[in-house]
Length: 82
View 1 (cartoon, rainbow, N blue to C red):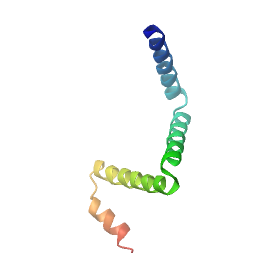
View 2: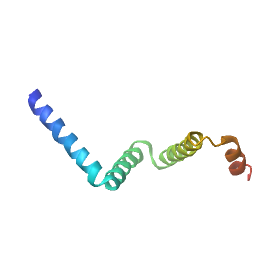
View 3: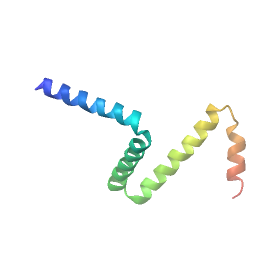
């Protein structure tokens, strides 16, 4: 039985490598859509929306940190409007 599962794992990994090489946008979009669908079903719309906003905020702040830009000026510029 373990030979069966190793063959299945090998086929899945071959498919994923092919899809990543040939269609990275489709693979990424499908994965994100599947993940968001699971979140909607398990958490509900509003909780998923709040989680997505925190993920985007974390991405933006992390990107600025990676680019060695000052985070505090970005926060002051974007949140001092309120």
